[in-house]
Image (tube, rainbow, N blue to C red; front, side):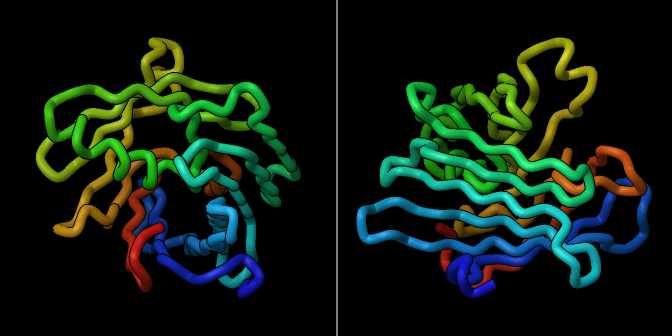
Length: 189
């Protein structure tokens, strides 16, 4: 896994209704000399990788490219930003950076919109800050029926230390919401 870069954080994933963690996340990062950042999220069930997501961002945070190999679904997806590369376009490995980039607006009471790309489609969401928790809710009534609001809890240094909401791996064959706790092994990037 060293080829995916420096290990930044690990997460334990406990699906709602479970009493113990079922998955483990790793976040790894490679900083390229041209200013691009490649962020890789690997989800493990036991010690077997089940989901690999890799996002390449420009130095200003714009999404350039994203690849996902989802072993549980038997799917692979590729996104090439092309003309659709906007500052508000987010995928799983870029979400926390997006949140941290917009903390000033969130702390000023502003709602921050974003477009989340998943499996070939984009979905509108809005971020708001409530105490130490950033809430992420779907802006479409119909998407909100399927995806409950998500919550990202910030630690004292603005690291995301916990997440509650939809996660990439399937649990018992179904899409699932989970509680995730993170341990940071290096400064976030």
